Length: 180
Image (tube, rainbow, N blue to C red; front, top):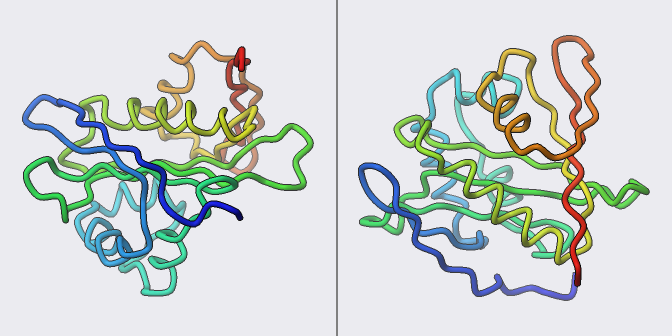
């Protein structure tokens, strides 16, 4: 964990209905993550966490907001008119024991922002960053009925391996080889 400061990532993404600013997460975002969680529908919470949660406890929020920017990374999208309001998060964490050099990946988008391409853009930016850190694949656990994520993975056209167990897909998406 040599990097302790967030990388200088700042990108404005224009969506139908407004813009968001994409940036690296920082520890002081913990209460903003809790506020995002509070605005998510029960369905969105279940699709992301595979369980119902009524709140995101302080210790979980701080853990999710604190990353080392190499083996773990998270990008947040903040409302373009209210930078304190996080509306989406895309994250990865490298599994050090995985010889494939895969990273577990997850994304959640506030319900009002879903279906506008934000999650797709965030995962693409996250993949670009991850490849620079040596990540060769993303691994996701996806409920069998989470059709938006399953369709997104299919549309990438990237090689995938899938295993279904108890209604949850374990999916490995191989990232493109870089020329660097």
